[in-house]
Length: 192
Picture 1 (tube, rainbow, N blue to C red):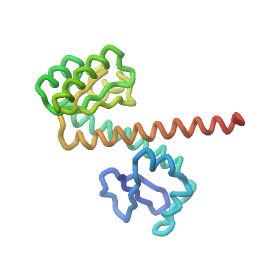
Picture 2 (tube, rainbow, N blue to C red):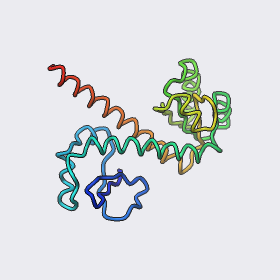
Picture 3 (cartoon, helix red, strand yellow):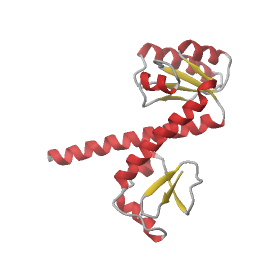
Picture 4 (cartoon, rainbow, N blue to C red):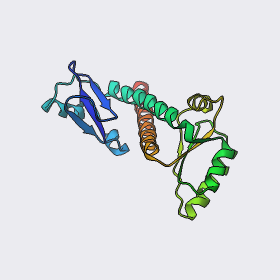
């Protein structure tokens, strides 16, 4: 659930830390909830607030942008404890720590296969390691980790890592939603 706040001008803003002033409403961020969301559904906010509608597409873009910024902030804060690169990630897995493994969007197939195999072996021994494919490419992930190019990173499981995983999943859901919205719009413009 993500808290939304309406400002004085009627704009809807996401509140990731749930600390912005004023009353807010909570938005379900599961894929099924977001698929059905539209300006009509945001109209429910009129009962308690005075938002300017239509605003769903703007809110969707605002959510995506702010998620990207928040993810980069969290990665910057967690990079000191991160295992960066294949060898470091594999070494951290041998220590049997609970990890979150993050691949760059353009990571090589061999690298993904090697690390996935290690993750599956760990999962068999009940050491779960969630795996995410980032929307960042190797250059962008490297920039966030203060390196040149980074294709795989592992974070030791701790409180910020759980929040980081949640934000990454939300970002993937929003990107899938915007891609499906663009496909629907192109079908409408093509007359299909």
